[in-house]
Each structure stands twice: as structure tokens, then as C-alpha cells.
Length: 196
Image (cartoon, rainbow, N blue to C red; front, side, top):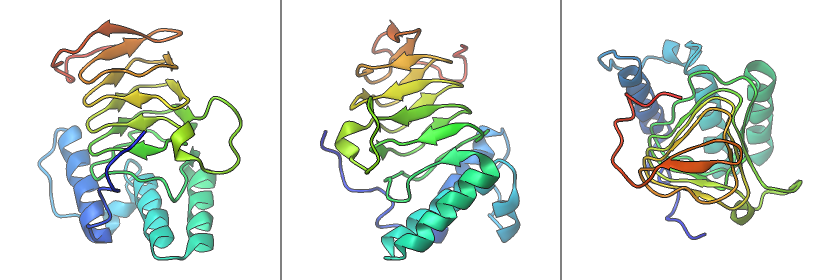
């Protein structure tokens, strides 16, 4: 799969955190306020702050320190995210425990709920993005979903709770079930109304 460059490569660390904070505020139904350093300690934002810190360290060449920050995120919040994973701005992780984001690419404004797993179909102890899922902009992955192998989750696609996705999901589609199947194909969905 060929994707554009990492969308955060041209953004500063502060701009990335601001984009994540603003989207989280809107997601929570609040008017976005200026992010203050205390925001990094919010239970809904701290794990994202650590993901972004690890990414920034990795991009700056501090790979061992980035790995240490990722390990701290795993120990404290129960979320596993490789520091080299390209993730666009606007990431929301409402509940992090039991979540493994071993994807090849995560686009802008993606929402990932608890106990979600992204990864290869087979054990992959290196990091090979082409063998991992790619999430396009606006994707919503709900609780307990498993997305395995080199699949594409389309723009504004929704993956239902506990779904096991082994094939591509088109843009604006809803997929659910084990194995996942498309239950609402290629339509603009009102994601606030979707229930699983």
C-alpha cells in the first residue's frame, strides 16, 4: 500500500498536541480551549500525549528514548504503539487499556476505542508497515475490534464492536461481525448516530 508522507512531519510537537486536544474537546461536546500543560495529565489525553512524545523523539533520532516512552505508555495506560508509526493529527483514544495499535499508517481524525488490536496476521517482531493495516482519515474503530493484515480501512469508515476485519473496508462504509462484512456500503454515514 502506498500512502502520503506522515501528515505530522510538517507540524511542530505543540501543533500536533493542539490538534489532538481540540478534537478531543469537540468529541466530548465542549468548546475547545487553549491546551495548557495540565491537559497532558487528563485521563483521556495523557496516553495520546505519550504517543506524540515518543513519535517526536523517534523523528528526532532519539530512538531508544522513544522506545522507553512507548514502554511507559504500555505500563501506565495499557496501550502499545510503535514510535515510528505515522499517525495524523486529531487522534482520539477515549479509553486506552488493552489497545494495540500496530498499524502501518493512521490518518487524520481517527478514533480508536479500548481493546482494539491492529497488527499483522502473523507474528511480526520487526516493524513492516506493508504487512499491517492502514487507517484512512476519519475512521472510527469501536471497542474490541481486531484489524489484521495489510488491509485498508477507508475514509470515514466505521468498524463495529468486536469485529474481526481481514479484508479492505471501503470509504464511508460500516463493517461488523466475525469475520467482518460490510453492513452499510459506501454511504455518507452520520457517525454520531451510528450504534454498535
